[in-house]
Length: 152
Image (cartoon, rainbow, N blue to C red; front, side):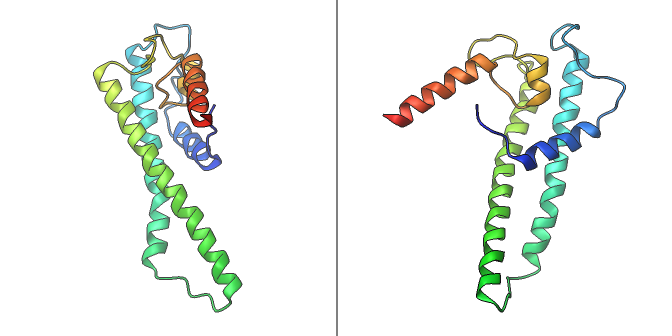
């Protein structure tokens, strides 16, 4: 399965800490009940908010001006760091689109159901990856097909 970058995990953990502690979804209750849907809506909104807050620092640094390191090695190192930071922000921009898509699925009553099989994705998977659109099995099959088509 696709790996999740460490920074994304930290931001998701921050979003989870911001949730009210009086409720946590469990497999013992009705799947995608109102309480679960509300939990995931709040989680997704907090996750999005955390990503946007993290990007503010990057934007501020970009506005502060160009890199002015006198030493060529220092300048190259700074440019490499900037490249990594900008790639991270681009990945997070794409993640925001996935979060918005998950919020739309909640509004439409489709959240929590596999887009391939129609089966429940599972509470534990959604807690770990709230933007999941497929069950673990469907995701693994999708990735195997992707790998085969890449290898051809």
